[in-house]
View 1 (tube, rainbow, N blue to C red):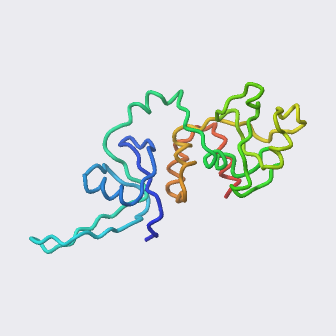
View 2 (cartoon, one colour):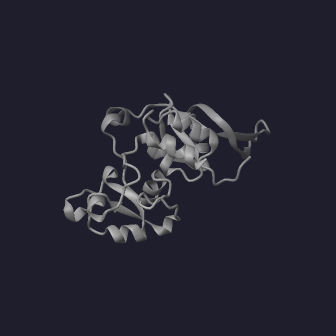
View 3 (tube, one colour):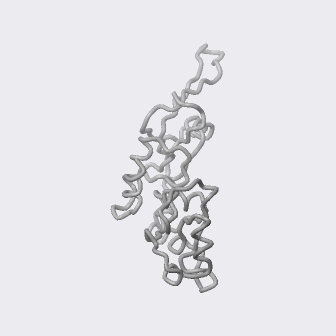
Length: 199
C-alpha cells in the first residue's frame, strides 16, 4: 500500500472524471454508501473501531478510482463550452514545464505566464492566449506578439477539457489513474503527444 499523500480520482457513475479527493473524503464516501464501484489499485486499507456487539473491527479499502452515485448534469450540459479556471500550475503542466519559445525545461519557480497577444494589445487572460515561458523569454518578448518580437511559438495554446483539467490538477497521478483519464481526452488533444514525450 502507498503513503497517505496519494489522491483518489472520483468520477460520477457513468465514469466521467469529477475531482481529486484525499483519503479522508474517500472514506467518508464509502461510509455514506455513495461509492457505486471502484477501479484501479488498492491505495489504502483504513481500520475503524471495533463493534461492541460483534467484536469485529471495521475496514474500508480505498481504490485509486472511485465512481460515486449521481451525475453532474451541469458539466454534461456545458461540455462543449467548458473552460476551466486558469492558473499557473495547471498552465505549466499543460505545457510540460517547457518554455514554448526557447523549448527549455524549467522548474515551476523559473516559469511565467506569457500572453501570446499581449493584454496591452487587446489580448485576453484566457487559456488559448497564454503559454508557459521562461522569465528570460517573457522579458525579451515584453509587450509584443511573437511575430513582432521575432520569436517562434513552439506549440499552439489550447483550452483543456474537463478531463484534461482534472489531470492537470493532479499532484501525483498514478499510472492507472493516468490511463483512465487519457481515455477521456479528445483524440485530437495535444496532451497525448506531450505525455508520450514526458515518458
